[in-house]
Amino acid sequence: MTPIINHVIVIPGLGNNVKKHEWVMEGWKKYGIIPHVFDPKWKTEKNGFQPKLDQALRLIDSLTNKSAKISIIGIYPHHKELQWRRRDY
Image (cartoon, rainbow, N blue to C red):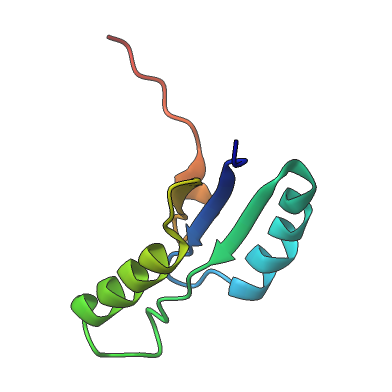
């Protein structure tokens, strides 16, 4: 049986430091998670959303195989937005 490969793609928000994300995620490898930081270059490239989406989809396609599990995490641009909000249902 082929072992499952766990890929995690992190997409930083505006103003997020890609190098810091790469540094932090290095430790994930010891848990069997292969991290990938996708840098959409939100502030520096003015090409619009579609080329960035196409690039992200190419990354996903390159990681896809029958024994791969792929997770995607989007990061908010400011830490204040990461605060938990209580919801009553």
